[in-house]
Structure formats: C-alpha cells, structure tokens
Image 1: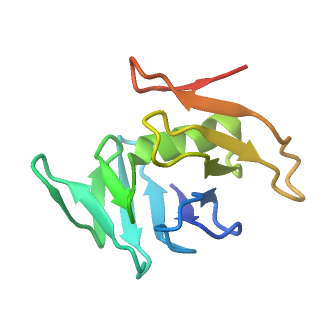
Image 2 (image 1 turned 180 degrees about the vertical axis):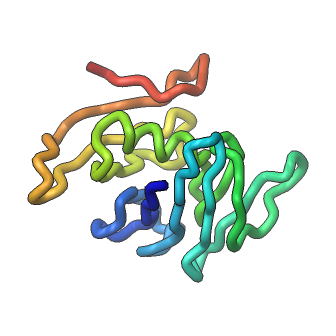
Amino acid sequence: MKSFTVGRARVCDIVIADETVSRTHARLTDHRDGTCKFADCNSSGGSYLFDGERYVRLESAVISLDDQICLGQFRTTPRHLLDVVAKNSPNARVIGLDPSSADYRLEVVEAPDRGIKKGGRVTRDPKTGRIVSDD
C-alpha cells in the first residue's frame, strides 16, 4: 500500500493549486482493492464526502476510489488523484490548473532529483470522466 500526501504545499505528493486546500490537507493510502484510506490532516478548510444527498465532514475513513470528495472547495475523487500520479510516475507532482473548471485539468510539474520531465498533460474526458493524456 502506497500513501500520498495531498495539499497546496509543493512538498506534498499531490499538489492542488487551490487556496481552499491546506498546505498539507490529507493523506490517501491506496489499498489496491478499489478503496483507500482517507485521513484529513487537521485542514483548515475541511474534507467532505458526498453521501448521495449532501457533503458530510470526513476525518478518517476507508472510502471508495470513486467517492466524491471535497478538499476545501476543490471537488474530486480519490481515483482522479491517484490515476494521474500512477500514469506519470509514483512520485509525480500534480497541480490542478483550474479547480473551478468542470474538466479539472492537471499538469505534471518537475519534481527535483526524481527525473520527472516537465510538461506531461492529462485531462478528464468530459464524456467518460476518465483521465486521459493529451499526448
């Protein structure tokens, strides 16, 4: 099982450029069975899980990779975050270019001393919702 830190700080494994996301907002641990452990790291904006009717506070729980979550006001799913990292590199850093946009464009940025090339782009297909490469 691999764990990833999620937040606004560049030292996080998954970096989200959204001011409502805390520097170190949460930790995701991929269980590789369609679930992950989500743990909020005492974020100021809070973490929320959509329960089918509304978003409820999420502190620490095992959730589906397809569950809708909010980190502050940034809406996503654990699968979207983990798919981008897995597609590019287990140590890739990603930045949400436009968290208010429906397509959640993400870009891989350089991770020093890890040999990751800058500029690989992926987007979410508006028809299927799947992450796809622009290459």
